[in-house]
Amino acid sequence: MKKLIALLTVAGFLTFGMANMAFAQNEQKTDNSAQTEEVVTEEAPAEQAVLMEDADETPQQGLHYVLKEKYIQGGALWMTPVLICLILGLALVIERVFYLNLASVNSDKLLKKVEDAIQTGGIEKAKELCRNTKGPLASVFYQGLDRYDEGLESVEKSVESYGAVQMGRLENNLSWIGLFLALAPSLGFLGTVVGMVQAFDDIERAGDISPTIVAGGMKVALITTVFGLITAIILQVFYNYILSKIDTIVNDMENATISFMDILVKNKTK
Image (cartoon, rainbow, N blue to C red; front, side):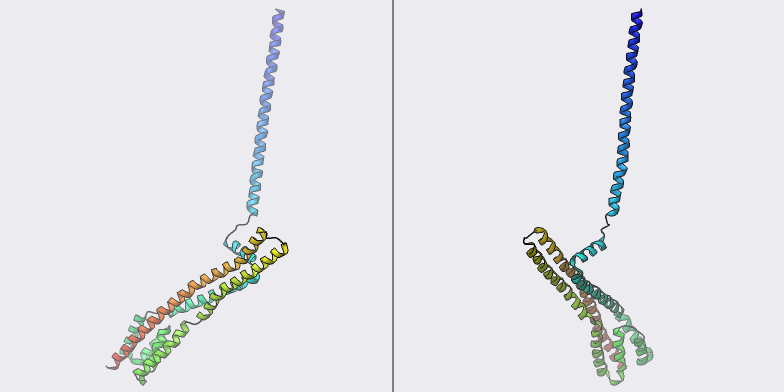
């Protein structure tokens, strides 16, 4: 009986001890897992914070940032003249576009108004109408009407002469646009040649043809050519648009002056 009690007591102690050991191990594992999760949880925000800081420190490379960076790489000495050509060329282009748009009129409506004015109020009323109408075509008509008393031949000569004057005004500043159009790529090529010479000077000083030196020098040298060609392309597109606009206005003026002379001849015979 005593042996049985002693055996049960030992078994109880062993069972209690094993249970405590298992519970301790489970608690330790749980604590370790919790600590690991805390470490991971703490490291994750830390990594996210680092990534966010890196993202904040990384500049947003927009178009203006890239252009500024390339401008600095190309060198202000050679990039500035190309930029000046672009700015002045675009300023002249904008001025010509506005002028040509204002010079464009509906010639058929103007001819109809002139004819009605001649039939209802005579030459003086037609002159007043042309004087108050903007555009080169109305100015040409006014000059012709102003010579009406001298005969139709004088009117025709006046219309032709003043038409040539108006054509010259339409083509005003085109020579300057053409200059900047040709000058921009030339300056770009000049900067490239000078940059290549400097690159070869760097190679000579280094005493070795290093790919880094060659590639870096050539990249910087070619940037001026790229910007010069971009400037020339932009100005060329607008230059051709202006030429086509001028051709359209001139053709319309020539057709309208023929109709204008027909109106004068018709009303002269009445």
